[in-house]
Image (cartoon, rainbow, N blue to C red; front, side, top):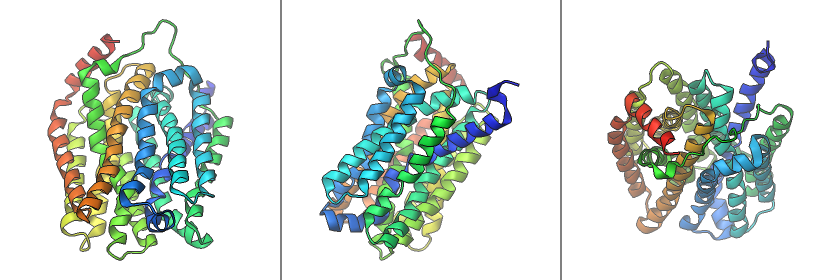
Length: 398
């Protein structure tokens, strides 16, 4: 039995995938439940505080677009280690943050670290879990979302215990440190593009741009929810702990969807029915937030969480359907995530701007409904035959 197929090594690979995912969202979701205290102490407006979510997402986009060069220059082992170190450093810095500029700097530092890891994970999955790509993407997506929900739940509790919001933000250096140690002890097998293998140029291909736009818009609601859902209910009189728990509740359904929907996707090559169900759930949830926010908040949040969790995993699977090799997965997924996250970054900023302009989040939720319905109509073009054909075109253009 080879080392890679040894049960202990297989378990270690899965465990490491989960630990990596857990570290990729606390930087974002720990902010919103503590937003009132942060704004009070730093003097930030709604629109300026939106940058604490938008800046990391912009970093995710820009770093992802450089993914192929970073992978070649750093390698997977050093690249992931650097990303975890940057997240750890950002959380450590937040323990002493007391100014808006400092928080912005930590958002940039940690966001770059998150982005670096996200660029490398699809290729790791495509190679390390070659026979279970859909399942591995589901586990990765679920752990990523679980980390976000856990941060929303735990951060206000930690902040309340220690008496200052900095503790609620900085506590997330602990899982980053654990992941960094585990990565050093149990790294995935590294892979590199072989000499003479051409680099893809997805920015020259219409289908690659369409995948990037699709990834960005079907997932942009997550960034708005992470940034503003607790704030929405804080304005209705909920406490920080209650509003944070609402985001954590949403995460439960994200995790369930991220595990169940890719498992269902594994049974068919047609992603469109599952994507349609997922986008429909999002549309219903956002509409409920507008029309009946206090009557059934947990129903709307559950629908949103289910839709977002499924869409993140399924849109990644859809992207990998256009690839044949791990190196192609790294290049196309890097481009799709890069451009897609830049689209995502507009969402929390736009929501904050609309809140400042109208005095309410309602308009922003309607914008999300329109975006989701538009993507629901677009989903029909991603037939299995079209994915294979256009995947070949992307690779031929390399």
